[in-house]
Picture 1 (cartoon, rainbow, N blue to C red):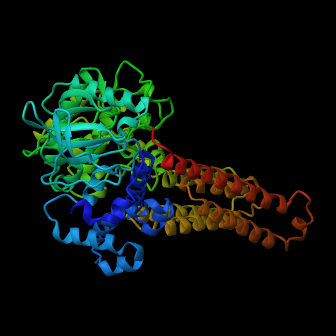
Picture 2 (cartoon, helix red, strand yellow):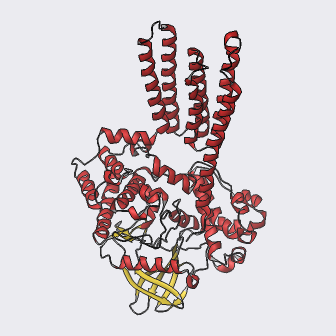
Picture 3 (cartoon, rainbow, N blue to C red):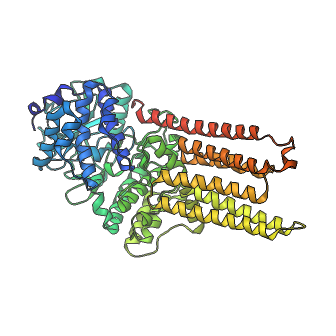
Length: 606
C-alpha cells in the first residue's frame, strides 16, 4: 500500500513526539486490557485523544482488535466496522483489504504485538522480518539516502528509538540503523541515554549479543548501526517453545551465557524480555537493546531514585520498586526467569490492566507454578524457573552462568538445584495471600477455642461443636473460592461471594457465642480491611455494607433481651459509624492506588 492510497491517515499523522507517544500508550493500554480478560472498545480510546489524531490511532487499533477477536474464534466483517466508524469507512476498507491481500509483509498488528509488553520506556526491537513493512503511528519513516547509508525500510519502533534496515554504501553491507525517535528535537537526557546504549553494547563482544558497528551523526540526527539479524524477535515465536520445553531450556541457556558475558564485563541489561531477544534464520538467539543498561559499579544519573524503568511484567522486585542503586546481576537472572516462564506458559509471570497493578503484583505476589498454567511442564525446569523468580535476590541463582549450568544439567537429565519445602510454602503465601491469611487466622481461632473449652469451668459441648463446625466450613469455603479463582472463574463475582461468606460466618459465630458486647466484634473491621487486598473500591464498600447489616441483625436480635437493652455500655450507633469510617479509609487508600496507577500509565515518558 502506498502513501497515496491512504489520505485519511496521512492527513492526521502525528506531528510531534508527544502525539506519537499518546498513540503508542493507547495501543499498549488497549491490548493489555484485552489480554487481562476485558473487552475494551476502540471508541473509548478515540475519545481520549484529539480528533485530529483519531484516524492514526484507528489505523493502529483496528488491525489489533481484528487479530485479538480472531484469536478468540470470533468472526469479523468490514460492514460491522463501517457502521461503528462511519467517518473512517475508507480507512476500514484499507485495513480489511490489506489483511486479505497483503500476505507478504508483517502487519501493523504484528508490530504492535511485538512491542507491547505492558511497560514504559520501551526500546525498539532490532530485527528484520522478511518483506516486513512498518507503518507506525509516529513520525513518518525516513526512507532514502542518509549519509553513507541508504535507509530501505523501517523495521521496528519503540518508546524512544526507531530502527531501519539500511545498506551501508562504502562497505556494501546490510545493517540495522537506530536513531532517536525525536530526531533533531531530542532532549539532552534522550541523547545521553541513546549514546550510553551504543557505548555499552559496543563494549560487548559475544556471538549472541548484537554487535555495534558505528556511532555517528548526520544532519542533526544521532544514530548507531549494528548487525542486522534476519529473522524475528522471540516475542513472535513464543508459541513454538510452549510446545517444546526442552527447546526453551536450550534457548535460555544460550541467552544466559550471553548475559553472563555482559555481567563479567561489568554491565547489567535491566530490560530482558522476549522482544529484546532476536532469533536469526538458524534459531540462534541474540540479545539486544541495552537502552536501560548500566555499569554494575556505577549509579546512572539518567534515572532518578524511585523512578520505574523497564518493563514491569519482566522486571525484578528491586527494580520495580525504583531502587536502581541496589541492582545486581540477580535482577537480570530474574528477567531470564520471566522469559523462561513465558516460554513455558505463553504469558509473563505478571500482567495486569495497568502498570501500577503489575508492579504491585511483582512486589507482593508469586506467579502460579508453570505446571498449573500449562500441564506437562517438567518439574526440574519448573524448579529452575521459580528459583529465578524469587523475590529476594539472594534466593535466586548467584549468576546467569549458574542458571545456564542448571539448565544444561536439566537437559542432560541430571538433578538441578531447586528449593526446598520452606521456599515452596513461602511462594504459596505470596501467591494466594487471601487464602493463607484466612486459613492461618481460622487455625489460630480454632486452637484458642479448643484451649478455652478445656479451661472453662462449665463448657457447653453443643456451642463448642457449633463454633468448630463453622470454622471448618469457613476454611473449606475459602479453599473452594481460591480454587475457582485459580481456574479462571469471574474474579469479581467470586470475590463478592467470598466477602459475603466471610461476613455471614462472622455473624453466625457472634450469634452462637452471644458475643455482641465482646472484643470478637473486631472481626467486622478486620474483614473490611482485608477486602482492600483485592484493590477494588466496590468490593470494600460491599463488605462494609454487609458488615453493617450483619451487626444490625445481631443488635436487633439482642434487643429483645431486657437486661442487655438497658445497658448503657453498648452504643450500636457508634460502632456502625466506626465500620463506615473503616470502609471509607480503606476505600480511599484503594482509590489512591488507582490514581497513582493512572498517573504512571499515562505520564509523559522521559
